[in-house]
Image (cartoon, rainbow, N blue to C red; front, top):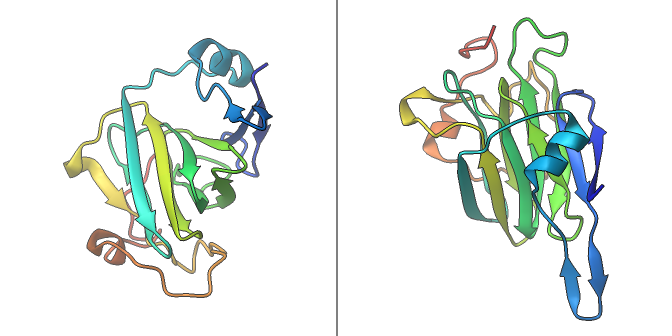
Length: 183
């Protein structure tokens, strides 16, 4: 298997760790292979869009989701380090309103599978970070929602000692009690 898969405290959110081949010249790993992904996770997904962002230290992006056209995401960092967070927004789920956070970095090569029905965001811990992610549906601006990053009802323990830099839409995000949710 080219990578190992470990469920998180939210069992449908998975950490994927690739098999990395390295020597004095550098490293190589296969970051995605549909056949191996299906075999290792039991999931058959079709990715339709790849996104790439670069952010400075202290930038917090999220927590984003689309209320219709919900996106599954396979995320990773190719430069720097982030603390990546996922929140279950499915009312019928036994883990509704719970969150999980994972350190993703260019050094640890970890990837995170976030299924549809979850909000997602990250904060940059290094000087800057480049973040790549695949999505299972397209982006629709009118369907995008933001969940408040510091909602006390969720209680995310962000590993930061500073006030993060937010986009206007994230600063004006809704709390879990106000948010549009999935069934």
